[in-house]
Image 1 (cartoon, rainbow, N blue to C red):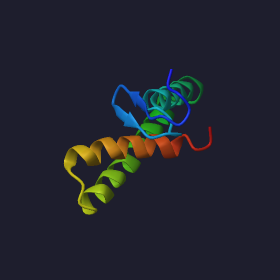
Image 2 (image 1 turned 90 degrees about the vertical axis):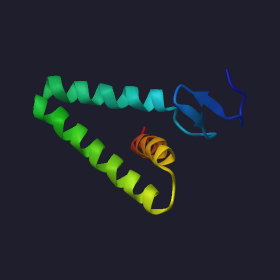
Image 3 (image 1 turned 30 degrees about the vertical axis):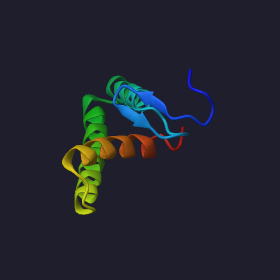
Image 4 (image 1 turned 45 degrees about the vertical axis):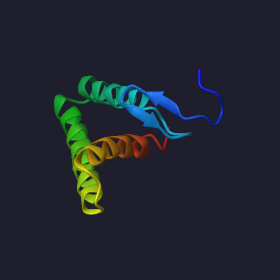
Length: 89
């Protein structure tokens, strides 16, 4: 267990102090998608996945425009979208 104030190393890389780990945020997204699939309709899960992909692509484009490498843009975009989506939890 990491001490208070230390960076936590997740399965996809370093996570800054105070951030939600990507695996935790991904689990929440998967749970919400499954809930939407069973309660509403498969289209509900498709809409959720489409919104996630839209925000991911926008984040990648913004990071590439700022001069980040492709790898940095992909990892940063995934972490950024998942972190921002978990703000309400």
